[in-house]
Image 1 (tube, one colour):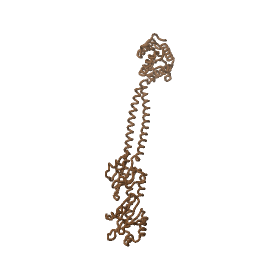
Image 2 (cartoon, helix red, strand yellow):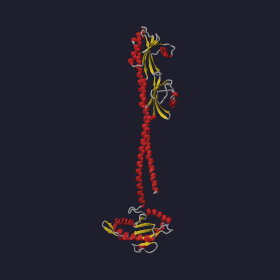
Image 3 (tube, one colour):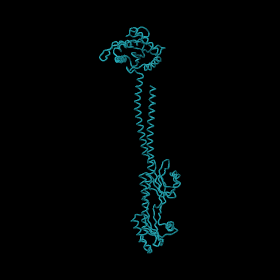
Image 4 (cartoon, helix red, strand yellow):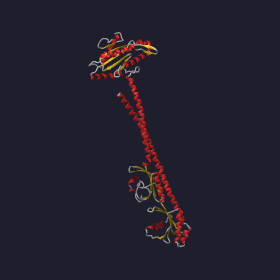
Length: 486
């Protein structure tokens, strides 16, 4: 039994390893394939698409500002007003207010080269070359470019300055409009909240110039240098010089994806950052669910296989230790149990007796009724014997028409009485074989275990007693000690 249990345990362990390994390989292969697909989608599609939307919205605003500012610089009304000596401040103020309202800008302005006045939609003020607030005008005049974009990071406003020239090319001043970046920030906030990504702009000096109004992964104020943000150490080491592209970096033990887009009009870089944890959380949950399902299925399979194999091994053990015809212990099975009974009897110094029984003239009976009749008689006799003994006693088909019974805690006199009872019951019994009454007798040899004996010697004594019973005329009981008991 111990060896069978060991074999079953080995089988189930091997099966568990094969099934478990197969499940684990399939599950983790699926997980890593899904993770790689998601990563590629984020790097190649999601983040670039976000950058496209943000940059396209910014481009639309820039184009609108250029169109408005260029129309102002070429507006005959504004040109005539300058030619007439800029005599009415109220007139230019109303004009700039109309531009601001019509094009939904944050402000509209005109800086005059002739009067050195700066006109806005709410008034006018003189300009001085040595004042920092007005230095942009003189720098732009010297630069000679037709237009430029300037961003006031402090006020989060983008200005479009457009050169205004007279018909002869004389520099008259700068017409322009400003546009608040609040709408851009709202768009950035919407993408940050909806798609769990961080969006911000960095200038050519690697300083944050615009970010979302909501809390972000960077979590540093505008003007902070990228090199001073600990969370971006891995990224700054990879990119000592910012460039366009998609990259992976580690931040505080977590994987990040980032897409960088260069905005040439502003000389800025648009940064779209996304954490891997938010994306992979559903995939990891699916992984754990799949693992639980796999282990559940494996447990069910192992349970079924264990139950089937246990029954199969029990059947094999029964076949190995029991006689198929009579379902009694066979010779091998009896020897295994009887050895223990002999050792126990010696240890406890209790009596132990054995009967060897042989059906009389069984060969002639077999010749008369055939093997089916002989098998029927053997089965019927086995059932008769089982009714005559106790549950603690051992009964075995020893071979052919011979049977062995072992009585525990039984002395020789009692064993002889029980043997006589069995002999008499067999002689009196009638076995119905397809309507044919069959009768049989049995010869029995009885022996008791001596203090210095063993199972082999005990069976030899009983076998000699059986020999005397058969030689004495059969249908009788003899003991190893002497004469027949009946």
